[in-house]
Image (tube, rainbow, N blue to C red; front, top):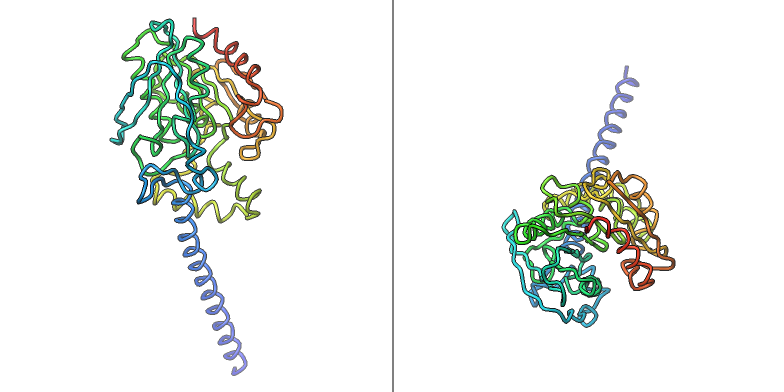
Length: 327
C-alpha cells in the first residue's frame, strides 16, 4: 500500500511538473511571439518617423537611403488628384496628359512597389505617355503623400486602385484602362481585377514581380534569408499583424484573385529575382483563369527591374498583349 501511495505521488508530481513546463513554455512562446511579431509589423509595415511622417517602413529605409529614392518627373502636363478611401484616408495621385491626343481614351494606372512612392512609377509612366496614354500614378496608402500608417501588402491597396479606376470612369466615360503594377503594386492590381466593383472600363492587367500571397512571400523570406521555420514564426506574425495593422496576411492572396480575374493578365518576372522567386510567377500563370493570359520571363532580371533589363522586349510585349483590348 505504501509503495502504491508513493507511486501515485510520484506520478502526480511528474504530471504537475510536465504541465507546468508546458504552461511556462507556451507563455514564453506567446510572449516572445508578441514582441517579435510587434517588432516585425512595425519594422516592415509601419511608415513614418517623428522627423518625417512620410518616411517608408524601416525595412525599406535601411536598404534604400533617401538620396536613392528620387526620380525625374515626366515632363508632361499634369495635375494632382485626391481620393477619399473607404476608410476615410486622403489618397493622392498625379494625372499626366500625353502631349498629343489629350482626348485619347487610352489610360493606365501604375501601382508602385513596397516602400516606394509614385516616383518609382515615373519610368513606366514616361513610356506610356509617349504612346499617347493618360497616366495616373497614385501614392498607395501609407506611401508618399497619401495618408495611412500601415501598408497591407496589396489587400486594402487593391480596393483603393478600384476606386481610382472608378474615378477615371466617372470623369472619362470612354476610357479604356490598363492596371500595371510592380512587386506589391503587382499584387495590388491582380487583386483589383477580382473586385466586384471594378468598372468595365478596366480592360487589361500587367503585373511584374508579383507574389502568390503575402503569407507565402514572407514564408520564403523567413526560410531562405533567416533560416527559420515558418511555424510558429508566421502564425505569430500574422496574429500580431491582425492586432496591430488590422489585416491578416491571408487576405492578400493574388493567386486566388487571378483565378477569378475579370480581365486579361500579362505576367512578367525576372529569372534572377531573389526576393519573389520566378516559381511564384509560373504558379500564378498556371492557376490564372483570366479571359486571356501570357507570361514573359526576362532573362537575368532581378526584382522589379525587368523593364530596365530588356526594355524593348518588355514594352513590345506589353503593347502587343494589351493592344486588342484598347480598341
